[in-house]
Image (cartoon, rainbow, N blue to C red):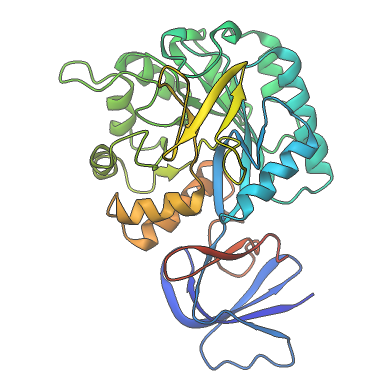
Length: 376
């Protein structure tokens, strides 16, 4: 079915076009129409001057809609989480499995494979966050689940039909050559929950380390003579850094400094969202522990942050208002840069002919009015 969206401010990924229109068909963007261009007899939807941007892509989503993926790693859970986050402009995501047992890991992989075969809207792949982490930097992860990496897990990560696969691990906890083996298989390895030294991270980057999970969190601070993982991440020109721009995980000034230091186009927004996003209630369970949700924070009883209560639309607003980035750059951090990190920038992250019609309509305050996934 052909659709025509008119009277929009269209952010193409490069610039904002005032008063343009967009023709969609077969799940793709067919053409951009300048103001006054003929629509023919196609039915039109007037967007009332709102902003139309590429749909947001979130590479780290633990839960949403009251459900935690790790607790129920099945197709119904993936669908519920994707539905919850779509309300906030997310049109593509990676359900994220927090450190857990082997049975849950294989169940999660099977659920993603099945959901992809079914064409579940919004599903891009799978993120394994652990359990191959440094126990000293486990954060809210269950320490009882943290264990050494074995060949069976390597084979699982490289499984076919999982889409884009991200694995967060502590480079200092895996044997040399592991990251290269996974990178060669197309898996995107991120360093996280790690106390690796600068030299260990440099070696991991040489093996193909692709990025860093929630930069600054669950890793030592950078110091004058010990740059560590944070210093190595900011100095490297090619790797990507996920950041949680909720005003709680990292001070906005720290993130502004990081944005100024890191290569342009290599910082991307993630939510690290928990079941409270798009859900109800002021608490939930994580590995038998109660996580309280209050003042925009998800915390264990001892105050440890346990994921976030952040959605992507709020992350974009915070990037503009707290991190002092331009609207265009904030939108790129939510769409184009994640697409590039996942190797999907040939089809997502821009509004251009031939790209997927994954779109978000935003009002002047950057609240979500509507989304399209594959033009629907």
